[in-house]
Every structure is written in structure tokens, then in C-alpha cells.
Image (cartoon, rainbow over all chains, first blue to last red; front, side):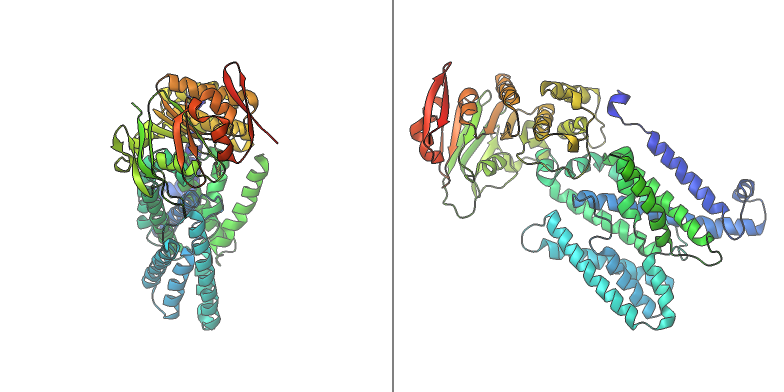
Length: 326
Length: 254
């Protein structure tokens, strides 16, 4: 029956291996490269203080943060695509990153510390989520098209406010603000909250996967097949918003991962959400770990914004896959 | 069982006077819903499936009001073929047929061997087994229509509602699909179809529901209602009626 089902676990296994490889690469590359044996020594608490500090306090937290953020964005993107029944949706399409950016930029302008910047970004993201949902709901119910239009309009409104804030900001604050807007993992030091969120979400989504498959075919057909459409859509919206808010709070608005990873994987593993969502978590995480490693090593000691790298890596890969698939 | 009944039902079509409908569909019957464009055939079908709230009145499934049943409970006993379908995401023919099993599987359950066997059998019944691994987006309209019917056959509910099941089908497959519907009724299912083809209705349905643009409905046995005196005003079309092998046939007149 295995062949009939096409439920091969091979792609997921390969993705897990790739994720492990990317994490090892991120640990070994940097200002002071470490070999595998040096990494192994540091992991066992042997080796020098420098190697142990590099691995445990600098590279590992950052690599795990990158993995968590990439995974969260890719899963959130896949969920948004199902919610809006639109393969062009991404985690930011409903204006969430704009809300987060305004919160973060305002905190930076006020000269607040990293923790408060993150809190402000999270608050901004949630505010934008509720605003879009409330506006789209209006009188009567919302439809995916209505939600999408509302989100796009609110997002462009946020865009204008962001431009205004940048225009009015003092010059010395601009680089930090621009890096935040493009996505930056340099200050991500607490990987566990987003990582646990990612794992928890994957566990929650496994039993929901088949319902999501049915929902992807439209609200009415899903209802006819026994799905409670409205509660499921609310759940997806809240969950995707929470994931995106967590990702943006950790690393700024990193673009591209949430749009392209679900697409790429659909070409490889198909659209069965039970396989697609865990695959998104692994592949999104891997892409961002690799991108962040490049971002901090290419022109070291200077760092590039990681969002630029995700796009530079992702665009050609995606176009290649698209070209190859009929 | 599979007893679907409407009690003083008024479907929710805007700006239309209330015309309550009483209807009982019992297992083994094949119903055709006929009427001009915009008369509310699809709305009626969706209301009977519990997908749209009626303006007033109620629908019962085996004497239980639909509104008091969960969607999943309804889907285990009642299935629907839609007139329009959208495919935003890639899916194969087999995957599409398999979602018919959704109402019967628990959240943690994977589709098992029995589910695959059912889906495979349904594809064979509709003459599309050879398309099993093809993407839906690569199929013709008629092939997609047959996949939708195969999904319903995989679901295998007691009550079959089909909105123009012969849409896009060639003559042979129109006839095959109508024969499938009659065969299901013969196995004790209740079948309700919206149809535009009077001849298919005359050949395969035993009961008809005529729906007028003002919301009025006439319900009854086929032979009593499928006559030119009733059908001509319904469709605003002059008709000629003939008889071939004991079946009525209708032809539009100039």
C-alpha cells in the first residue's frame, strides 16, 4: 500500500538531515572556524574556553533562533495560504509585520532597550491582527477575499506610517531601524520560546492536517464533508498570527521564507498538510540558518541583513523548481 | 436510513415572497429538481444539506432537525456534489476522491487500506481509474465532474444531493452517471439531483420538484408533472412531447 499512498517519509527524513547539517555548519563557521572534532569537544565540555563560549553562548543560540524563526514563518505562510485559499499569501499579507514594525520603530525612537523593542513589536503585531480581523468582519461574516483586501489595505497604510517614521527619525538611529525592518538575528539570544512554540504548533497541527486539506478546497465543500469551517478558520488565523508575531519579535520582518518555502515544498511533497506543515518547519528553519550563517560570514566582521540573503538564495532555487515542474 | 424531509421550508432568496415547501424524500427514490435559471435550485439543495440557513421552516434527517446535528454527523449520512469547484492547490485524483472519507476518520487516524480500496473502486466505477495519479488541474471539465462524483461515491452517504451531476459530461457518461444514481437508489439511497435536461429527468427520476421563479414549488411523481401543460409555463418555452421505448422525450419548439 505504501506505493499506492505515496506517503513516503523520505522527503521529511532528508529535510531533517539537511536541518542538522545546516545547524552544524552554523556552529562551525564564523570569525574563528571550528572543526567537527573541536565542536564535539566543546559539546562534551572539553576544549578551550573560547570554543565553548563561541558554541554555547554565541553561535548555538543564534542558530537555533534562526531555525525557529524560519520554521515559524514557513508554517505561518502555509497556514495563511490555506486560510485565504490563495497560494500567493504570506505571513505578512494581512499587515501583521507592518504593525510589528511600527511598534518596534517607535520603541527604538524612544531609545528603549532590546526587550522593550520586542514587546512593542509583539503588541503592534497583535494590534494589527485584531484590527484587520475586526474590520474584515464588519457586518455579517467575512470571506477570504474580504479578509485579504482588508489586510492588504491595512498593510499599505502601515507602510506609509513606517516611511513617515523613517523620514522623521534622527540619522544616528536609522541603521538600526533599517536592519530591524530587513530582519536581523544579531540580538536573538533566547531561542527556546520560539523553538518550543514551533514544536508545540507542529504537534497541534498533525491532527488538524486532514481538516486543513479539506478546507483548502473551499469553505462550502469543507462544510459538506463535516468540517466546522468557522471555528477552524478562526483557529488558523489566530495561530498563524501568533507564529508570525513570535518570529517578527525575535528577528524583525524577514521576508520571503513564508511565501516561498510552502510553494517549494508543495512541488516536492504535495499539498497534504500533514506532510507539508512539518516539512515547512524543517525547510524554513534550514533556509534561515544557512542564510544567517552567510549573512554573518560573507563580509565579516560586518554583517548583512539576513532578509537579503533569504531572497538571494530563495529566488533562484524557487524559479529552478518552478521551471522543472511542468 | 436516509429520510430527508422539509417542513414548511422557505429558502432564503432575497426579495421573494414566502412559499413554504413540504417535502419527504424516502430511501430508494430518485428526485429531479427542475426549473429555470435563478429559480433557486442550488439554494434549495444547499438548504437541504444544511449549508445555508432557511428563512423559516426546517429540514430533518431521519426525524432529527439538521440544525441540531454537528457537521460531521451530517456528513456521515449526507453528501453533496457541487456545481462549481475551485482548485487553488495541486491535488491528485486519488487524493481528491479520498477526502470523501474525511467524515469517517478521527483526527489522529490516517486513511487505511479499506479507505483506499473504496476510493479505487469509486474511480473505477466512474471510469477514471487510469487518471488516479494525475493532478486535478490537468483534467478536462468532464473528467473533473467524474472525480467529484467519485468523491461522493467514496463518501457513500445514505443521502446523495447532486447539483447538475451531468454537467460537462459527454452523452455516454451522462447516461452512465444517471444509471449510477439509479443504481444507488436501488441500494436504498435517497437521491436528489438538480437537472436541466428534461429527457434525463424523464428517463431516470421517479419524482420531480418543479421550482418556479417566484419561489412556488410543485412536488410529485414524474408522470403527473412532466407534461407539456406544466413544463411549458415553467420554462417559458413551447415543447413537443414524444414517446420512445415507453419513455417521454421533450423537444423545444420554435
